[in-house]
Image (cartoon, rainbow, N blue to C red; front, side, top):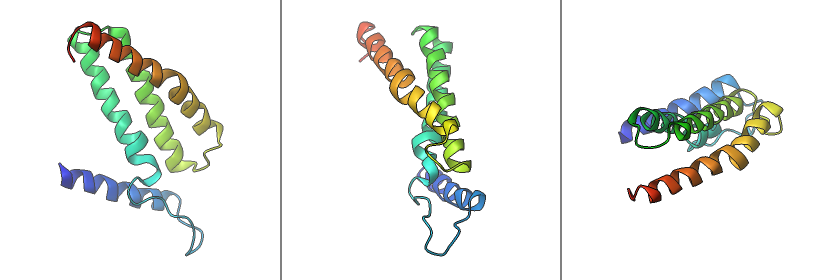
Length: 123
């Protein structure tokens, strides 16, 4: 798993540079640890999608919680693709999903999940 994780980071770094090559030798390069938000947005979005799929399929938590998780996952993936392709964090394509997910969808999802886990005594 560690090798797969390392390969993903390496591939993400190369992909970020291939899609938007640095203009000069001393140009700002993407982070080698989290290239253009690969882990922060991309992997987190995929993980949240899988968790939401499990929530919807299990029937042990509200299906609407899983659907809200799907929305958050899609917003995270849009953020990753935006940071990968557009680069400018002030672009509406990046700023809109970032604000929506960061201040509304994600906090509601985590608070709701926490309440459901406490209520069901699964913590």
